[in-house]
Image (cartoon, rainbow, N blue to C red; front, side):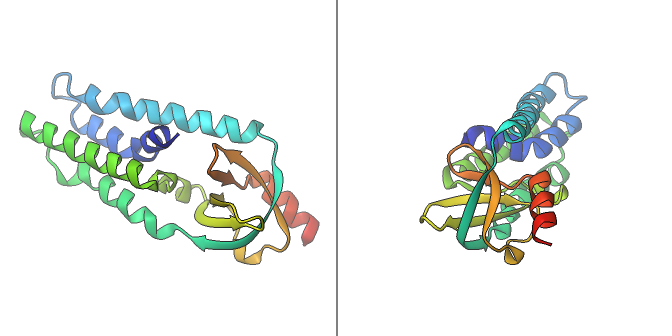
Length: 175
């Protein structure tokens, strides 16, 4: 699941590099293919979360993981900083640099933090349940305002996602 989430997280950077190399023979495919896979993963994850049965989860501790997003933001600057129109060497350097960045994020488990989710109103947290299990929690409401359990859908074995419709229903019932 980490490789797929890595492709999803870095698909905008890869898409920008594909766009920047569009006039450079076939090199654009080097970036466009993984970007397209990342988009397919995003759609697949959305479908899985929408179809999954949300279950009530009570959290004992929730910490903001927003600081982890800085590594993604840095990689998104790569297509802006590297001028791939100058030479094939620049394209290879950009591909290797982005490949190393993605690999490091996958190896360290930071692929769960996706900057695109922030644009959609979600935030990422490290959350420990009342039973002591730790997850990455992707939520659209503020956990500081929660009381009791929260309806969340699983995405893989280490990620829980608060669905927007469940968040609205929970807010309507408690407020």
